[in-house]
Image (cartoon, rainbow, N blue to C red):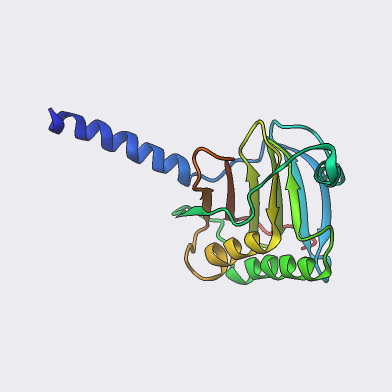
Length: 192
C-alpha cells in the first residue's frame, strides 16, 4: 500500500515546491506610487496593488501611525529557494546597489526604520538588472517590516552568490502572516 502512495506523495511534494519557487508575477498589478531613492536617487521604489487596498506609501505611513494595526514581521524567519531560470539574470553588483540604498535610507532615518506594506501589495526596488520585491501575500493583514531585515535577505540571496539566477525567501510561519521577498533579473530600466 505504501509503495502505491509514494508516487502520489512525491508528485504533490514537488508540485508544492515548484509553486513556492515560482517568482511572484506582478505584471498584472497596478502601480500605486513610484519614487527614486538612495544617495544618488538611482533606485526606483514602486508600490504595486495586486488585489489589496489602493493606497499610496504616504497612506501606508498613516496606517502605521494609528489608523490601522499592522502586524510586525520584523525578525521573522523565511526559507530561501533559489531559481533555476532562463535570462534575464541580475548582476550581483546591481543588487548590491539596492542593498546599499536600504542601508543609506536606514541611516538617514527616512520614514523610520520600518515600512508598512498593505494587504495585497508589493513593494519593489529596482536598479539596472536587479529587482527585489517584498510581497504581502495576505488578504487580511497589513504588515510592518524592517529595512535591515530586507537588506539582509537581499545580501544573502542576490549579492553573495547563493542564488545566481534569483530566488525567493518565503515566510516560515505557515500559520502567521504570509509574505515573501523575491530577487529576480530584469531588463535594465532606462534612467537607472
